Each structure stands twice: as structure tokens, then as C-alpha cells.
Length: 317
Image 1 (spheres, one colour):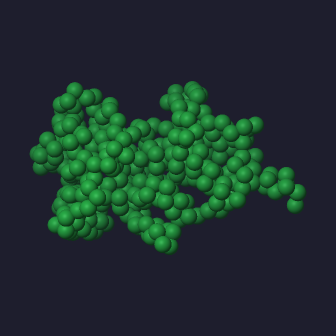
Image 2 (cartoon, rainbow, N blue to C red; image 1 turned 30 degrees about the vertical axis):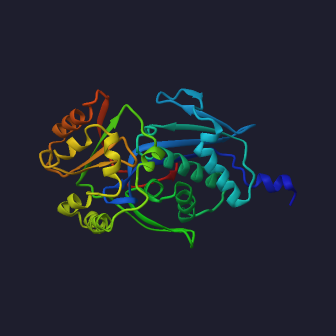
Image 3 (cartoon, rainbow, N blue to C red; image 1 turned 120 degrees about the horizontal axis):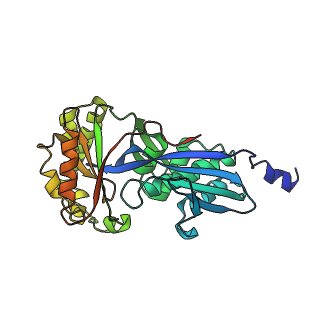
């Protein structure tokens, strides 16, 4: 087969669209292991072009220059990885990106961007990489599977990386519909690398056992919809105690858990977004007010909104 024809077999005449949800990770005791997908999305539209070009679509649909340089473009990085895995050239495309996931707020914007690039290029090149293969590539890039797993599969995701086998072992399940998430999203940002550098290199046996027992309880309680188990399971000693000083008002809010009838409050990812999980009997309007009041004490603007769980995950439209 001529080289030109061999290249053309990878191209598609039609448009490719992919939609990937936001996510939270480090769910209480589930540090680097549990993620939940939310109905905020990064969307890509791919079309043939005379060059590889990235554009940004704002909320009104107006097309603008892409706000990231190539070195920061995780979508491009993911597209290159898929092309390399398949052994195909990176095609010339117009890539239009639209996203309502807040950047650097702990809601998985980076994971969603990378997963979107993987899915879009795999579809465009007819690569045939499975979801499990794409999950491994994404988890290898991130260093942990919780955000990318939730973005790929939706619902809540429990996973562990097997580095020797080069795969992720996981369960992807529907999140209980009877519980409601409230997200307090601050105006300020927080670097994931900065938040990770605050964590100790070693932990005491006591703290490790504390988290292990609560992690087991949390996962089983999510499956059985056991509220008391979730309340205890959302407690943590491995990451939140070292990061909470970066989020003014978080400790104060946690003291109000029983008053607000919350199952728990957690730092979403590396922060600064704070999530509250509530049962059916909670007064969500009052809870929103108290979350905003507690987390705005330093003068920061905090937007509190309800987030619906995405139970589907990444998909081609």
C-alpha cells in the first residue's frame, strides 16, 4: 500500500466530538484511590484542517485563541501519546475546546483535558484502544487513577495502579442518588504540586491504620448506602490535615457537620474547592449559606452550588 494511502486510512471525513466530566478525588480516607464524576464538562470538537490548531470556545460559543502554550496543553500531550501508541502520524486538525470545569480548583480539569485528548485521538485514528488501555495511559500520566478513572467511567471509581503489570485494577459503580453534593468553589486557585509538597514522605503506623480502617468502611458504605459508615469513612489523616490551612474556614466548617446534617466535608482533590455531602433530610439552602459564610471569612469570594453526579463518563457524541 502506498505511504499516502497508508496515512489516509487513519483520517476521518466526519467531525469527532468527545465529552468528559469533571471529577473529585482524595475522597476523605480514599486518598489517591477514590474519585467521583460530576456534571461539569470538557468538550472537544475535531475537524480536518491544513494544520494542527487549537481554539477555545467560550460559554457563549465565541471562538477565541487557545489560552495555553503547547508545553501546557495536556490535550495535545494526550493526542501525541495515542498517535505514538498506535504508530500513526499526528494529523492536522482544528481542535475546538470548550470547558465549564474551573481550572486549578480541585475538580479534575487537568484529568478531564488529558482524557479528552486520549478519547478524541483514539476515535479519530480508529485506534481501537480500549477504555482499560486509555485508563492505564491516563493513570500513568497522572500518577494516580482516581480523577481519570472517574472521568472515564463516571459514577464513583475505586482503583489501584499495578505498575509491574502496567494496568489499573478498579471498580466503577453508580454513586447513590439519594445523596447530594454541594461544592464551595473559591475565587482563588491552588496548585496541585504545591499541595502535594506539603504532604510528609512517611506516616506513622497509627495514622496509616486510621485511614485503612476508614477506607474499607467508606468503600463498603458507598456500596450499601450506609450513611453512618460514610460519615466515619470521610475522616482522614493522610492529606487533609496537611492542606487544610491553605483553605481558610475549612476547619470551622467541619465543626458544623452535625449542625448542617452533613455526611462530611472534604477537600476536593488538592483544593481549594470544598465539597459537602448531604442526605435527604438536610436543609440545602441553609447548608449553602453556612458553607459560603465559613469559607469566605478571609474575604475571598466563594460560590456554592449543587453538583450532580455524572454516571456515564467520557463518551463520543
